[in-house]
Length: 497
Ligand SMILES: [Cu+2]
Image 1 (spheres, protein in one colour):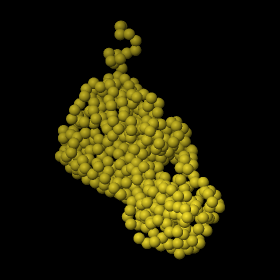
Image 2 (cartoon, protein in one colour):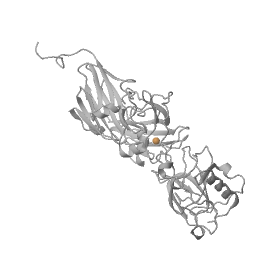
Image 3 (spheres, helix red, strand yellow):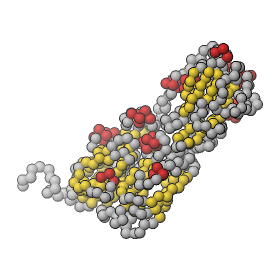
C-alpha cells in the first residue's frame, strides 16, 4: 500500500474556491479536467491508513461491478465497497469509472458530495471535496435501487492536526440527505410514447403431437417511454417492448435455448428468471446482461404448467414493477384440450411519483413500492390495454381459455370475469389438477392460472381483480361476446310468459 502523496497547492486552492462559491464543500469535474494542471497523483488504494499530520490529497479509485450478485464499488485491490479514510482538512478525490452501460454516481449526502453520473461511455469522472468535519459517513450511488442492492460504503473522516476543523473554512453547513434528495421534476407526458400493451391474442399456437425437441428463443430487454394511460407516459422496462413480454410455449421434455439480449441504449442491467427452470436461480444467476450484450442459457422443461418469468436484476421488484414479466407455458405430453380461443393476460401493480391519473410523465416511486402502495393496477401493462386498445372476443357457444398471470411485484389478484363462471381452473398454473365451477380464483405474485369457460350468452364481460378498488386504478379488461341470446340462460324480466 502506498502512502498518500500530498499536493497542497492546486487542489486546496481549487477546493477553497469551491467553498467560496457556496456552502458546498465539493466540486465535481470530469476526470479529464480534474487532472489538468497538476501531475498525475499517485494511486492510493482504499482503505487508506489514518491521515498524516498535514492536510493532504487522498485519492481513491472506484470502479463499479457486480460481486456475488450485488452491485458494488470496487477499489483497485478488488475490495468491494472499501472503507475510505481521510482527515479533516484533507482534499479527497474519488475517481469513478464503469465498464457498464448502466449509469451510476456517488454521493455522500451528509457532506454535500455529489459526483456527476458516469457509465462506460463517459469515461472516468472525479469528485473532489475538502473534508470539513470528522465523523463516519456513507457514500452510495443515488440511482434508484442501486444503494439498496449494494452500492454503499463508509467514508471515515478523522480529526486533523490538533483535532482542528478544516483549515480552509471555518464552518460549512452540510446538506442533509433530505435536502440533497430532490424528487424528479414534473415533466409532461411524452407525446411520442409508444404502446407497450401486449395483444392478448398473441398466444403461440398449440404444440400439437410431436416428440420433445430443442427450441430456440431470443428476447431483448428494452427501456422505453410507453403509454401508461391517456395523457400519461411511464419509463417502462420491457421484454421485447411489450408488457407482459412474449408468451413462450414448449412441451414437457423440450430443451429450450434462450438468449437474452439487452438493448445498447439501456441504462440498466437486466436478466431473466423463469419459474419453469430448475437450477441457476431459474436463469437469473447467469443472464445478468449489461447494455449492448447478450447471454444464453439452455434448460429442460421438466414439469408441465403455466409459469411466470421476470427480470431478476436488483432491485428485482423495481424491474418487475416497470414491466419485466411474462408467461411460459409448458404443455404436458398429451397437450391441452382444444379450445376455440386462447388469450394471454397479466396483472401488475405499479408505483409512480405522481398520483394515479396525473397527466404527466410518471417515474417509478421506490418508497411507495417498498410500502406496497400502488398507484396503478394494470392488465397487460397499461390502463386501457384490454378495454380500448385491445379486447378479448368470442362467439356464443365457443370455449375460451385465458392464460392469466400476476407479475406483481407485490399484489395478489382475485381474478374474476363479471357475468361468467369458470368451468375449469388450473389453480396455481398446475395442469395436473383441475378445479371445476369457480367464480373467483386467487393468483399469487409470481404465479399464474389457466381458466376455461364456454360462453353461453352475448354481451360485454368484464375481467377484473375482484379487489374492486383496483378496477378504478386500471385493472379492467373486456371480453366481447357476440351471438344469439338464449332466454333460458338469461332474460330481462320475470320468468312467466
Ligand atoms: Cu430488468
